[in-house]
Amino acid sequence: MPFQKHVYYPLANSPEGPDASSAGAAPMAFVPPRAASGPLPFFQFRPRLESVDWRRLSAIDVDKVAGAVDVLTLQENIMNITFCKLEDEKCPHCQSGVDPVLLKLIRLAQLTIEYLMHSQEFLTSQLNLVEERLRLSLIDYEQSKQLLTKQAGEIKLLKDECKRRKKMLSTQQLMIEAKASYYQCHFCDKAFMNQAFLQSHIQRRHTAESALAHVNPFSHVYILM
Image (cartoon, helix red, strand yellow):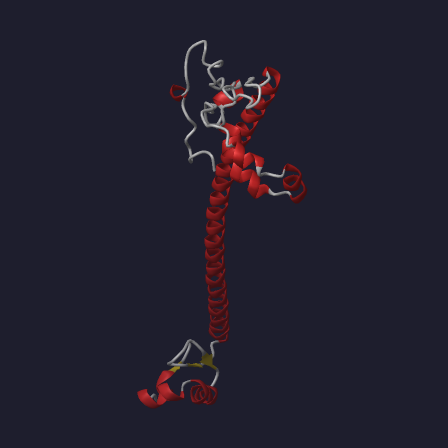
C-alpha cells in the first residue's frame, strides 16, 4: 500500500508559500465541513518528487493490461505514476516542456488516484473494525446462548423436582385425610399402603442399600392417628 497505516502526511511536510504549486508541490486538499467534524481522518496530498521511470512505462502494453484486467501491473506502477514529477520533463527531441493543459490533466489524474488510494485504505480500516466488532458480538452471542441453554436445563430439573415433591405431598395428604397407616421407605421419599408393597419396592430399587444397612422394614411403619 502507498500509505503507512494511520499516517496521513501532515501539512508541515509540504512546501509553503505562493510559489509552491508552480514548484511542483500539490495543492492542499479541500476538507468539507462534514469530513472535518466527522470520523474521517485528515487527508493531505503528498508532493510529487519522484522521477518518471520512462523505460519501465515503455515496456507496458496498455491494451494488453486493459484486455487482461492486469491489476498486478497497475499495482506495481501505481506509486511511480501517482507521485512522479512531470513539470521538469523535456522532450528528448525538441527539449520542449509538457503541454500545460496535458500537465493539468495528468496532475488531476494523479490527485484522483492518490485520494482513491487514501479512501481505499480508510475503508479497509473501517471494514476491519466492523469485522472485529462482529467477531466479538458472535462470541458474546455464543456465550449467551450457552448460558441460556444451561439455565433452561436447570429450570427443567427444578420443575421436575417440584412435580415430584408435589406428587409426594399430595399422596401424603390423601393418607392423612384417610387416617390410614402407611409404610415409609427408609432409602427414598416413597410411601406404601402396606408392608408387602414396601418390601417389593426395597427388593427392586434398594437391594444393595438394604443388604448393607440390614434394614428391618417393620421398624419403619408409621401409624397416622
